[in-house]
Length: 432
Image 1 (cartoon, rainbow, N blue to C red):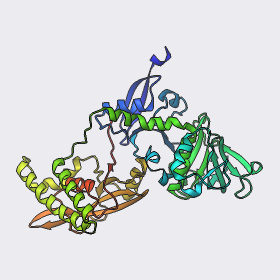
Image 2 (cartoon, rainbow, N blue to C red):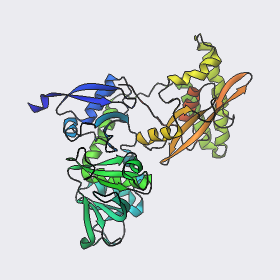
Image 3 (spheres, helix red, strand yellow):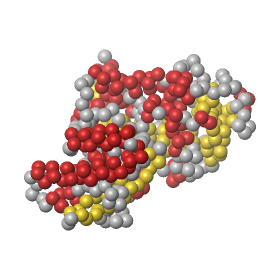
Image 4 (cartoon, one colour):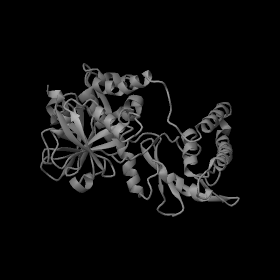
């Protein structure tokens, strides 16, 4: 009878709005995300996630899809809350394991000579009888003190250990730092400010019993984003094993059972045809792929402008419409700073092709495309340019011009042009 007890849960969105949802005691994080997607009329692309957020401790983590909401809430303090957010990187390690586990950080307890091939890396993490290990130097905050020490650390199924003698992994030199059982791994927000962390790549192993006190938190800090991601991903794999893989596979299996359809995009038929033609020519003549992309941009602009003029019933003057229409799009984030754009991209997952557009801070007439590629965030200025008395937008010095930013985004979703990769996922904030 317990699963049929109802309970109220309050969930916040990034803009501060919130919704109280009545849930059953056996509702999982995935179930609640799907309910919120339905209630807020979002597109369900399986990238929505529930975040456990502790502002007073400066910690947050994405809940695993199978976790029970009621159980997680019972470990949270009064100031803590759930956030509803996109996270495109949640299962990225299953798609691109090579990017997540640098060779020098992976070891195998049972092997002294030779290493496991990268292709078998994930199978070995998922196989409960194997003994994978992540190793390397981390800054470790001493419990109850303000100081940090740089130590050689290794993560195993049995827990997180540090070496008391250099890089020695002999049992007598290993000291337990934290247990994987009854604890979870969190990203550190504002670690420098709150905990005097040596870098911005902090993370933390928090025992579930700890609610408001920071004394028992095992605070750690990596040298860069890739190694922090490696430690945190390995913790999740060692803790949950095959459950994570099942979480990753369920939406794919559901999708395979549904008839295939793609997200509606303006001028999809035109853009798909343009992209297909360009792809065929690029395969035949790789050397002219860049000029083909530029040529495609010109043709695209002419066709789209003609379609817009013929189909426009707007009372606004066409040139006025083209300068404001992007404000209706989820990917446009308005007047946010460069730092804020970094924060949003990091929160929603450092995956290739994750992007947003924003107003330029240095040029009031320009815009900026913020794009993630190889776990690095890059910025591309979009400048207005005039041609035959009409305003166009371009991010490659006028070589490829578009009458509005929606056309520009649609083009670069299909052709990478001068960008390091195509635009794939847009950062989105929804009001609940």
